[in-house]
Length: 243
Ligand SMILES: [Zn+2]
Ligand SMILES: [Zn+2]
Image (cartoon, rainbow, N blue to C red):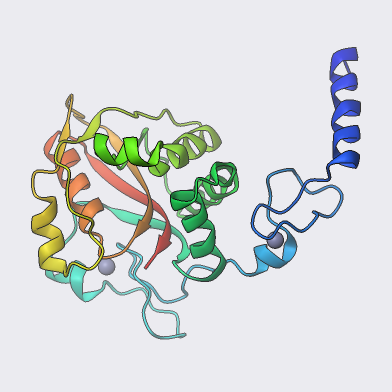
């Protein structure tokens, strides 16, 4: 081991003694040996597991504990423009708390554990990995307000964990839309019409679209449809929480 690396490790150990790493969610001191920027065992055990019965395409959970994987009614009625959705778990409990802190309260260090969990969900989905990560974009006005795009922060973590490049600026939000919250499915869809545009074609590319939460799926449907029209051969979606 190089002398600098050794010195760095010693320094880190001293810092850990003076300022022991704490859980990003509850602030509890982490057990020795836990990597920094992690969750404590209690918070980790509160993270939801993927539903045993869910739609194989859009990952919506069924209200049953008996394993089932038939397509849901929405996907049967109107097959979505994406191939499948990888979700860390239902949008509830500790996961919901973590996402809200990350998205609305500027707790940016959460991007690392959340991004790692998202990359693991994509890997668990099996199959060959997509070639390019595309974050769901924010409109400039919302970006100025929040200061960062949570989907881009997550995309960078996922891209680096999976070794896939990230294209942060190829899909744009060209229309400032009203918040989707409180709108019904039809209103959500028309609210998003013409909201996204691409800056170049994606002919033959296999893409991974990343967002934090998927509720009705109107946003990822609209983005995936724009990407497919731009030539993408397939779009997979990765989200932390599936409502
Ligand atoms: Zn904790
Ligand atoms: Zn479905």
